[in-house]
Image 1 (cartoon, rainbow, N blue to C red):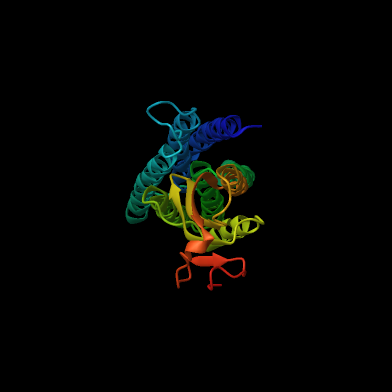
Image 2: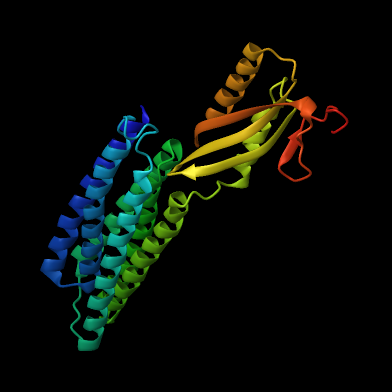
Length: 307
């Protein structure tokens, strides 16, 4: 399955599951008046709204390159994730306000067996959805799907918190129902903040983890005709990584040989799933353009007196 098809299927699945949960939780809330269940219904409604945004965003980001976007549309994806985060934060604040009002006024209700059933079922469904989205986000390197996975993970915890509140209310502590609603709200807001932190880095072009940089260097130096590497600069362009680097090769190589070496190294680095594009500058090793910094790497052979 290609990336486009996979991501669109994930978005539609998440949208469908959230729509079902909104109906189920909303129905139980209307029947019982449980603040904990009502908070979870709002949470699922927010999930449903952002699922629509994710489906739209994934449709846009998986469009092929065009003259106006020659490198594709993947840079839109972090903006989709930030929109998701905004919706989550707004929902969290609304749920917290409702819970606090219920505690202050004493207007609490006992959800009973229907509330227990819907919250327990929601926790199980959300856990399965979390595992699925996490696996797909890692397979296809999608920050929007990763944000969705994180939200589903938080939904598991908030559903369990709401379930504890409903159970407590059922055995004689009705105030636990709105308290559980407040706990749910904090979990919702934490998820929103986590998504913001993760995706701002994509937008400002932060460097990827050092492990990825080391793998890029290892792949470049693994070519038998590459004697050194320097000025290695990987950086995020949206969720994907662009790489620029200098390769040191023997200066008496023909243009055809140099082209073949560059092509081999570029293809090897591009095979790294996170990497989108690679830009290589070739230097004759005899010039000794090594730098006395941590950004120069050689194969250990003598280079005009410099190793």
